[in-house]
Amino acid sequence: MIRTRFAPSPTGFLHIGSARTALFCWAFAQKNKGAFILRIEDTDIERSTQESVDSIINAMDWLGLTYDEGPYYQTKRMSRYKEVLEQLLMNDKAYYCYCTKEELDLMREEQKAKGLKPKYDRRCFNSKTLKSGINPVIRFKNPDTGSVIWHDLVKGKIDISNSELDDLIIARSDGTPTYNFCVVIDDLDMQITHVVRGDDHVNNTPRQINLFYALGAEVPIYAHLPMILREDGKKMSKRTDSVSVMQYKDMGILPEALLNYLARLCWGHGNDEVFSIEQFVKWFELDKISSSPAKFDIKKLYWVNKEHIQKKPNQKLADLVFKSFHKKNIIIDDMQKLIEIINSIKLRVDNLNSLVQECSYFYQYVEANELEKSQYLTSETISILNKFAINISSLENWSIEAIKVFIKEFCENNNIKMPQLGMPLRLKLCGTIKAPAIDMIIYFLGKSEVLRRLKV
RNA sequence: ACUGCCUUAGUCAAGAGGUUAAGACGAUAGAUUUUCAAUCUAUAAGUACGGGUUCGAGUCCCGUAGGCAGUACCA
Image (cartoon, rainbow, N blue to C red):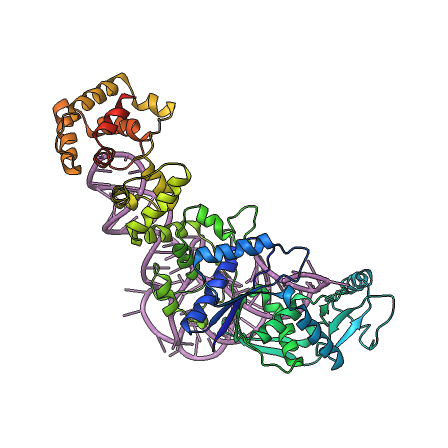
């Protein structure tokens, strides 16, 4: 059975790049009827927080990336790590190292000065027994000849010489195990068949494979996904970009749209741009992922989002708008009417916030700003509006079509062009000139509300 | 500095040695319109650079440049 895992470290929110990794792990497991496992890599106790765990889970929940097992926490598996640590020590696959940080720093500086790559020089390699007084770290005896080769599902064959690798620390001086070691034990114990992760881990892979070998274990299949970069080709940063998944929720992006957009980065299915998650799962193949990094294009995300909004049932959109209004203490009593409004205006929007904004004209009176008022509400247009108010108050047939005809005739009878009436009318009714079709606004507002707003 | 990965229009991308290098987003122009939007039509824009192999290279090989990552008692 196929088993994949998503293994974030809880040192912040769910990053947009991690979300894509999670999506691919999840989709691959789904497609193959395997299991998708969530594992929290919290061995760095200093930086890990419960809030981060919660926010990551919350974001995955919003995206709909459900996991079959977990969350497992590395901090709860310490005894198992210690056990394997002992085993490696016993089998002469690891050794104690008494070097201090200062010593190591000095060693690296000397190496750099000589133009060499910094690498542990194995000065403690033969220290078999414990020395008293100093708490040693445990280092893994990495092979020093030959090379590590694996066939990455995304990158193809990768061959890294063991001479590039040094004896990595697998346990700190306080006895706690380190990342590269825990990952291997976890992937082994959790019987992970496919390790799908960001390609910033490519350099860790040969070390981890050597650990698998030392434990006599089968090495999983690897797939390293290219990074998602900022539009200028740099790494996405917290300060300047929206890197948290939940920020996209706040921006009015639909989860299915974000997933769709993310899926199209480094992966594609012919000319298909807009598709459902179900469809994606059916099409998805790990080995069809391209190996070059992609830049994040917010404009295309909005376009994909717009397409998904158009596809989403009006009832569902209405529920979302309802919730948003509810937060602002605007209560909607007639859901059917809201659904009709949404149906008439949704083509205008590419995000949920705009949808709420466009709906709000019908539920909340907003006065126009002074600049626009002075521009559009002249004594001439005000007298037109007054006349319009009087005339429409006697309109009997209240339908969009009838209102449309009424407006047309009003303009003809008074010898004015449509914008002369439309612009000030929009401003009075919606507080903005960038409003939907005027006949529709009037229809949904209702006669009394139209007259009320015209009088203000 | 070393090692690994990457490089097709502004962006995402198709391309399996063989027409004139798809498609999408965006941009620009025009049409339409009741403002904004939407819609329709059209246009511009690309194989990083230099060699080689070949009858033929975006595709294979070598080199160069640029980008990214790692070289932690972080993950």
